[in-house]
Length: 190
Length: 190
DNA sequence: AAGGTGGTAGACCGATCGGTTTCCCCGCTT
DNA sequence: AAGCGGGGAAACCGATCGGTCTACCACCTT
Image 1 (tube, each protein chain N blue to C red):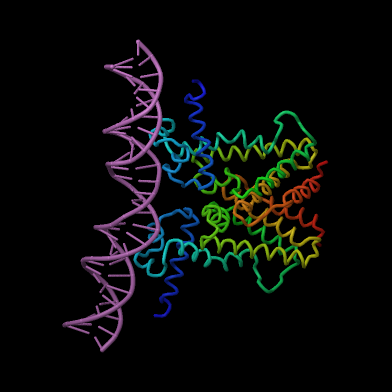
Image 2 (cartoon, chains in turn red, purple, orange, blue):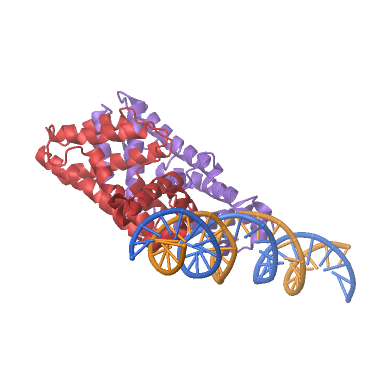
């Protein structure tokens, strides 16, 4: 049948790979990757040229879902710009409370692969760029005095909170929302 | 002579190891570690039980220097609490401008070794705890409304900025000092 | 029923991992 | 000068790395 064609097999492998990479780190072995996907090495290497490509593709595959979780309505502008920004951090705090939380997978990939030219690093930078752009757009809508500055400040808080919560040295119950509120107020955003 | 006794040999190995771990990541091989220290594996394993121990010891060895760079006078309270906090971020921004900057080595270790029980993770958590304590003490001295909250906010900014600058996706010229100033003002600190 | 076809398990490859051991030389002691 | 001990180079160990390939099996077509 058509539901088990190449594409969906590929997607299932990428979903399993994304979860395994996230749980174990990017240095996890190909064997473990295949085991978690329930597929043989031969099959995986028929779809992907290398482990690096699997990593990059698995990060890319999660991107739409990642973005949709932080920003629910892509077009439907639900709420004020301020509310939409705060919503991102509420989702972050919620996610970080889960026991399996390990921090933002895109920032983790950038840190673990120190190589900026790695295909997965390119994907990860794209994810960060997208969120920065979202913050900047909302900051402009909200009339911040310096939208670019505010957006970069919010990224600092977002990535700092993700990294610290993921490392288990911070708990974030209301911490980021309190911080972001202070920064929004200081920026003159309504 | 006494200057080339066990202790100083050990320290030289740890200094070289710290630099190599920082440059290459914690997954660097023992062989490269020995090469950079100019010592054979045999000698290194006479001083350290395992690579994990070398990593933990090398992070611990850098700790006093790391702390002194962020907080110049340990006892001599130079400047107001606000100035002393801002000084930390000025040093961070200065360090992050160097081309070899890779982010805070302690946060990187926590992210790369996902194991919180790893001896190096314990050292790294200690480094983070120390800075948090410094911020909290200054926040109290400065009369912040909620010193603990402010200290945690500053750690968010510190680690977020270090991670992003280290990953090469942020530049930090004045970004953290502007952010911290806004947070200090919002906290009611004088 | 016969003959593909595609995917699986897993052997296999050379390289490298962390760690141990052998061999040998070099410098110190007496 | 003879002997000793520490350390460097490198062989070596079993395990694992990323990646390839063979052997087989289950199913689909005709």
